[in-house]
Image (cartoon, rainbow, N blue to C red; front, top):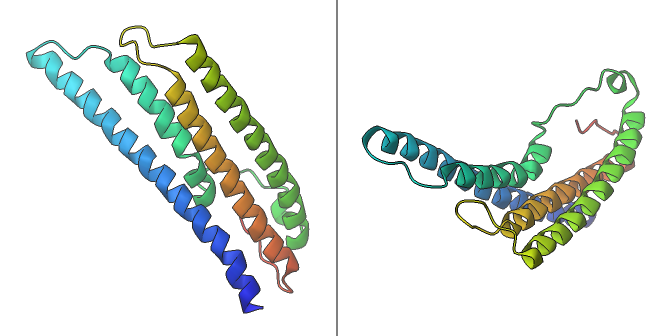
Length: 174
């Protein structure tokens, strides 16, 4: 039994490591956004601000939001309205949660696939930003990585639901 628990815990640790790495990259992008914005404001006071700040902040915002998705799922910082489900037995909550989480994981895997396809299409077309002429495709690909991280976090939730359903004393995971 301890081998089963240990084996079930191992993928979760790896998933948490991936989630933490994505969140760290999102944090770095956020710091760059802040530094760029503050620097641009300061330069407006004494000189000419740097060119393309709006574009860079927009691209960094894609990274911040996309790469933080998995961390938001793992730490439950997203909005959930569960007035109906909290009144149901824990096993019913877990089964419904498993169904919804499975559907969400499949949808986000499909979204990842489409984002990768979209980024390759952007690369092939040579799509670039207007003023800095930076390619769009790396940001679309980074967004795909963030969405894949979210799908991975949802799989970790499914593993937790499965463990709880097999338990003699299941607990709600939300």
